[in-house]
Image (cartoon, rainbow, N blue to C red):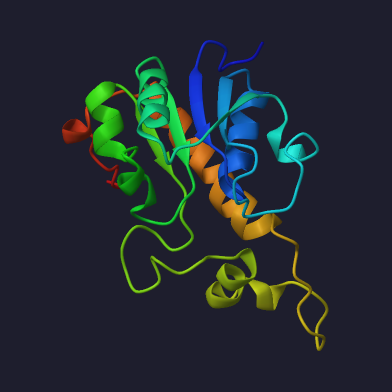
Length: 191
């Protein structure tokens, strides 16, 4: 039980900030269903999903999303979900038939959350993103460590988790609290 009890979330399995976001929302009581790759398929990481701490607090099912039947089954789940989380490079879920347009056609009230390293557009959008790169380019890495020594990278806790996954979770919860249609959403600007 928690403040998000009753909120239904679908998370496409991935690495880094997207599963961290799913873990946080599950910790707050949301019912998170993680969609894992079917056994025997290529994995981007070599961690047993049952032992990965970022997978805690949620159920999972394995699907082969290269098959139209699996996509259709997943879209059926989307119809009953409140939130959808994915952490792929731009265009991947669209090619799969699971992009925002396809999901929102099945569930107009769905909050679709994306996590990419460098955003959806721009010169680095298709580039793999890593915590150390974000910290170095932003100048934050320079501030970590002792004066006169090389910076000490803080694992992936600052950029990926604190700057990515935590803000994604916050944004998704805010969107659920204010379910205005996208055309009516306005950015807040200070007076």
